Amino acid sequence: MYNRFVKLYVDNIEYISDNTSFEVADTFDVYLSQIDNTLKSSVAAIEYMISENESDEHILQYITYQSEKLGIVSSTGSRGIFGVFRGRFLHGLGWNPENYDPTERIWYKEAVGNKGQYVFVGPYFNKRTDEYVVTVVKLLEDGESVIAFAIDYETFKGMTTSIVQSDENHMVLAMNADGVVLANSNNDEIGEDYASSQDPFKRGIYEAIQHNQGKSTFELKGGEGLKGSYIISRRHVLYDLYVVTVTDEDALLSELRRSAFLFGSILFLGMTIILILNLIALKKSLKARQRTENLKSIANIYVTMLRIDMENDSCQIISCADYKAAKIIGNGDRSAFALMKELVSQMVEGRSRDEIMEFVDLGTLNERMHGRDTITVEFLSYEHIWHRARFIVVDKDSRGNIRDVIFATEIIDDEKRARDRFQYLAETDQLTGINNRGSGESKIRDLLLKNVGGMFILFDVDKFKYINDHFGHDVGDQVLMAIGEKMRHSFREKDIVLRLGGDEFAAYMPSVFTEAGGNQILDRFIHSIHKMDIEALGDYEVNVSVGAAFYYPTDTFKFEELYRRADACTYESKKTTGSIVTFYKRKDSEYIEGE
Image (cartoon, rainbow, N blue to C red; front, top):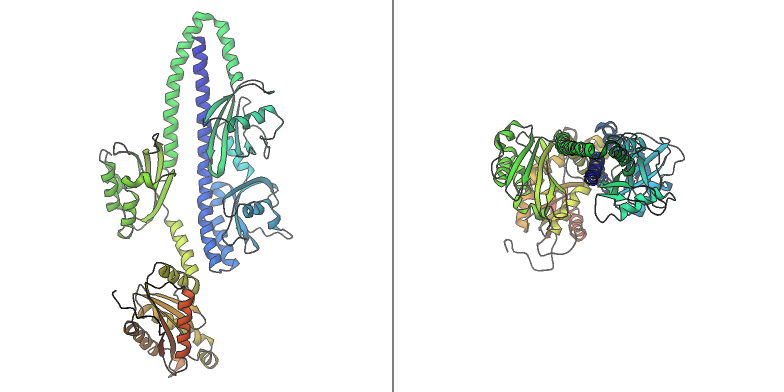
C-alpha cells in the first residue's frame, strides 16, 4: 500500500508539473500570438509600401501607429516595432540615436542570415533600454530591410512566475531550442546556456529534454554527477521556444517517507486511503476548474465559440455573445454540418457568404487543416462589421484525422479598416484618385498571367507644358484631376485605369479585342475630355494622343512588350493635331472575337 501510495503521489506531482507547464505555455502562446499576428500584418504592409516606393516617413507613421495606437506596448509589454528599411533605421517609439549602426547588431545579422524566416534572437543587451531583451526579426523581400519586435526580459520573467512563485522545489524555465535560458522563475539566468553548462543539473535538464522520446513529462534521475531525482515537464510554444517545469521529486517525497515510518502500518493504511480519495477528487476538481478557466479566458476574446465533434457530427456551445447566433444555435442538439451552413446564411453579409460557406465545410476540413493546428478567414457580418472566423484543432485520432475542433469568431473591425485604409493609400494616385502606376501595372500583369486578354491604351495630354506655362500649374493639376474623373466615368467598372505620372495615363480593358469595340469606349472617353469645363482654360480645348494595342488570350509576351506597342502608337498619334487614336497593327493573324 505504501508503494502504491508513493506511486500515486508521484503521479500527482507529474500531473501538477505537467499542468503548470501547460498553463505557463498557454500564457506564452497567447502573448507570442499577439506579437506574431501584429508582426505578420506589419511585414505584409511594409513590404507592400517598399514595393510601391512609399516614403520613409510613411513607413515610420505606420510602425508608430502599430506600436502605439493598437495598444501593443500596454497589452504585451513589448518595446514596439523597429528595423532597418531601405538602409534607414526607424523605430516605432521614436528612438533615433546618434552613431548607432543597426547593421552591426545581432538582431540584424540574424535576420539577414536566416533569409526571410521569422527568427527569435537573444537574449542580448539593448542600448536603448539598458536591459536585456529578446527580439523577433524577419528579413524583408528586398534582401536588406529588416523588421524587428523587441520584448523585454521582465515580461518573460513575469510569465514564468505567474503560476509558480519562487520555490526551491519547483522551477519554471523559458528557453530556446539550443538550451539558452530566456527566463527562470527562481534565478536571473538570462543567457545561460544549459546545453554546454558544466553544472550536471543544468546539462542534465537540457539532455533530458532532447532525449525524452516524445513525452511531455518524464523523470530525470541521478547519474554523471547529478544527485537526486527530478520531474521534468516540457511544452513547445511559438518561435521554437520551450516552457520547462522542473520539480524536485526527492524533496517532495522526503516528508512523506518520514510520516510513513512515524505513524505505523495500520494508521498509515487508513491515512493512505483517505489521501488517495482526496487526491482523486482534487485531481478531478482541479482539472475541471482549470479547463473552465482556460476556456473562459479564451472565450472573452471571441463572440462565438463552438466545440464540434467531427465523428458524431454534433456540437457543444462554449460561449455565444451574439443574440442572433445564440437563437440559431439553440441548445446545440442539431447536426453540426447543418448548423454551420445556417449560421453562415443568417449571420454573414452576401458578398462574403460563398467564401465563408467553403470555409465552414466540415467535409473538407481535414484536408484543409492537414499539418496545421488552426486556420482563419475574414468576413463581413450581417451588421456590416468585420469578423475573423477560426478553426482550432482540439484532438486527432492515430491517423491524424480531426476528432474535435473549436469554431470561433472574433470582431476585427478596427484592425481590418485600418489595414484597408493603408492599402488604399498605397495603391491610389493622390491627385487623381485612380490607381497609381505600381498598383495599376501589378493588376494588369496579374490579368496577363491568367491569360485575360483585352485592349491596353496609353495616352498623354497634348501640349501639357503649354498649359502649365500659360495657365499655371494649379490649372494643370485641375486638368489632370478632371481626366482622372472622366476615366472613372467613361471606362467600365472592370477596366483598370491608372496614372503613370505627369500627364501620362493608361488603361486596360478586358475582353476588348477589336478596333470597333475599342473605339466605342475611346470615343465616349475623348468626347468627355472635350466637354471638360475648366473655367481657367477659357476656350482652350484639351486633346489627348492615344496609342492602343491588343493582348489575345493565346498571347505569351510580357507586359513590357504590350506597353512598347501602345507607346509606339501614342507617338504616331502625336504627329496629328487633335485627339487621335492609333491602333497597333499586328503581323500575326487577327483574333476573332468569341473564339
